[in-house]
Image 1: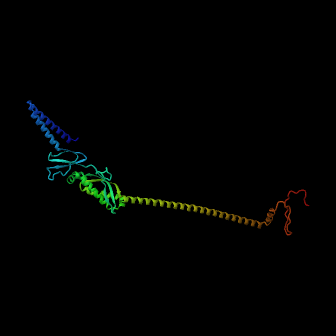
Image 2: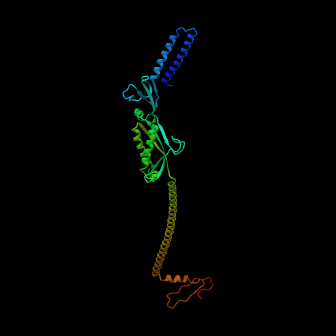
Image 3: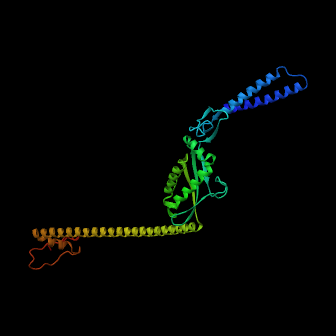
Length: 343
């Protein structure tokens, strides 16, 4: 309880006490037993009650979340141009009075749900898009009275600013902005731009009337059943297309994998073939080199060929006939015969 309320309460008690004392003094005088100095007591209590009432009528307490609009019979325009700030103030009793206005944040909600908005029932905003589609918009407007514009709000709107300013201006701006976009834009790609344009419009129009926009909340956008069904069908088609594209991509990956495997196998076969060819080439070169060495050896020692021929004969041959023109006869090794020499 603030000081102004305490003074006002004290004044009420004084007036009650004044009436009680007055009744007691009158009754005592009527019974022939007048109260000593009763009239003086009544005058004193009455004077204190009047002074307290005057003081109470002149004291005004303004809370921190409020501003006071002073209506004055002494001002040429009928009001003070500057609102009262928070705290205790004194005005001229019975010539001035104060109307308090809240400057804290307030919210006005327009919703399709029955019990969510400030108006019971469906209070959403019906709007038409640029391509003729009807949409229902749920929105909340968070605002506050500009402390420096309290006199303006009082003169133009009094306590009607909520229903006669915030509500119609909000609904009008929302409809105007929605009409500049197609339903597809509102639905998906440009919802943020829509919200930004509504915020800009509300800031200008409410600000011109002494009300500050704190935030605009685009709660929900609901479309007609026909458009909702078409959107659902489109989404299903897009999902099927994405699934088909995924299958095609998967098949392409499998084909690419098969090509890589075949390429690897072909490369391996080429590598093996090249290895075999190189091996055969090396063997051929070795054989050619060996033949070359044998040929060289035979040229240097012709008897070596005869020796090689003899070593290849069967092991049980003990003697052999040579042509008459053979230059020499070689003795064959003995196969275990003993006791006969030179015979």
